[in-house]
Image (cartoon, rainbow, N blue to C red; front, top):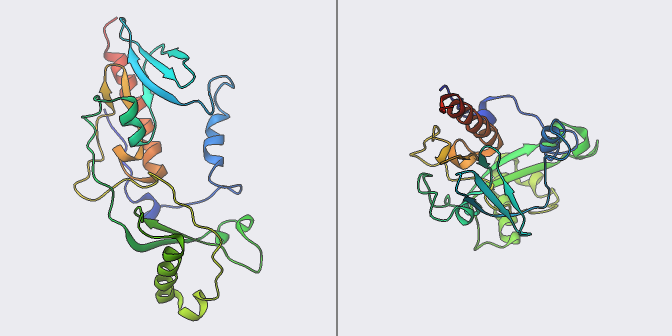
Length: 225
């Protein structure tokens, strides 16, 4: 089976942002599905198998959803470990990436005017790592120092800090060795997708979702009737 692999898309490819924010991407995907096919604000607590080997998904409310075919897991890795306790050994795990103040900077106003005003620019700075021992003020000071070396201290010191977001599991550890072609099937009628099993960020997540579906279709074709 041919499997697509994305490398360096955000570095080498053409990038864009929706005019109303990155949250528009899942909305665009959802509108193509039947209105009753998505349950929002519904946490999964376990995935089990009955006598017929069909997966049973237990929700936090106690409701049990019986799969008609298979289950494809698309959750953060720590959540996966909780739901599938003892059944995720096939997924290679790494320690969290070491924190570093090397910044990824994007001036989103250059893409859409809706991200700022005509006389101001919006700079988004991304840091890789947890920074558990750094306060938001410490991070701001370190980022300003690094950006001052790029753009000049006189310019950066006039910038206004707006907000700091700490987003858990936003970037899996991609340090070598990295396997970008992991088998998405991790059990009987159970498949896995997410950027931590392929290349990081949303492009890898989308590619892994397609890879899981391709593996499912291949298995169904080869399954005895």
